[in-house]
Amino acid sequence: MPDQPPSRAASLAHLHAPGLAKGDPLTTPLVLSSMFHLPGDPAGARQYGRYDNPTWEAVEALFAHLEDAEAVIFPSGMAAISAVFLSLLKSGDRILLPADGYYTPRVLMERFLGNLGIAYDTRPTAGFLDGGFEGYRLVLVETPSNPGLDVCSIAAVAQAAHAAGALVVADNTTMTPFGQRPLDHGADIVLAADTKAPNGHSDVLFGHVASRDSNIVAAIREWRKLSGAIPGPFEAWLVQRGLQTLELRFERMCNSAEIIAARLAGHPAVRALRYPGLASDPSHTLAGEQMLRFGTLIGLTLESEAAAEAFIASCPLIEAATSFGGVHSSAERRARWGDAVAPGFVRLSIGCEPTEDLWRAIEGAL
Ligand SMILES: *Cc1c(COP(=O)(O)O)cnc(C)c1O
Image (cartoon, rainbow, N blue to C red; front, side, top):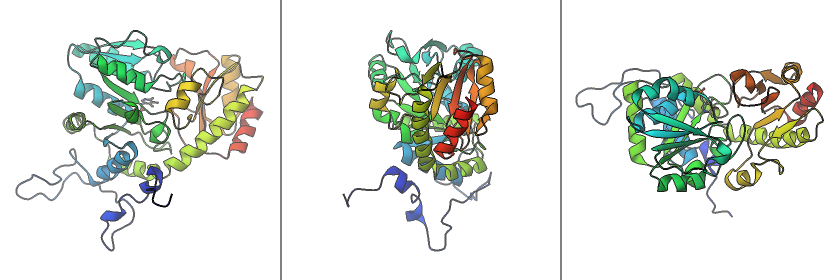
């Protein structure tokens, strides 16, 4: 169809072109400034580096384009999560977190938000709808969950949670806006650790929050300005650079993950395997309905802790590291952090290496 507008991925690279004057740089400038020229009435202009920055604005425009929603950036994924909790919750509220999701939000509640009178419960992602959402002010979903890769229906959670009066927040870190679009399924807020695939080069921590509700965005923006949890302009600049190749990297990573997961499923050293793209996976049907891709993470269980450590150590194309989403493949045994998984469970993050090289290295190490 010749009159079809270019996709989000295609137009991303050309987003700021219409605003350029003759002679302007084609690339996004890195602006390092705490102060702005501000004579007289300060209204309507950039005022101070804790409130605003031109490089932030450029990155927020990219996230807004990707999420189809207004976006606010943060110096890490946890800063984004903290901003959502602290700007939208008050004493007496109760929230629901995934029992099998990223563990730091639970620790944050335990250590600090409980002291402010905010209570929390946890529930496994696979049964997230069981028990309903009555009494909750906010519900956080993480699907697929990290590291177990269980999936829940964002649309079904949103419908039931909204009926109970709760806000629905989706941590979309494992999928990126190219793999899953939680706001389109009814979530009120999407957030992510852009530390992972969106930046993609393992050299920055970063996060963002996006919402189509202007009151929510205003509260989160005000929280950032007052709390001072602001990203550095250089980190923002690196993330806009990373985002320009996100679609390309994510495609390669997801394609490789699909091929490698299918081969791992038939390997005699693998005792159990989780990947939402496998027809045999308990997440598969829901994943096919709600995800655009099946993701870049594979959960594989080897015979023992020793077998898992030996696999990670001996594979020349896998870095032993926590975190995921980099151009290089990486892996770790999640039981070392206390996640409720088998001692031989390895979270494998598929990187951008050529697929067959990566498979040969993995097969050799197994
Ligand atoms: C890594 C991660 C976070 C936290 O991000 P940081 O940038 O490390 O603060 C939050 N949620 C999920 C699902 C993550 O994987």
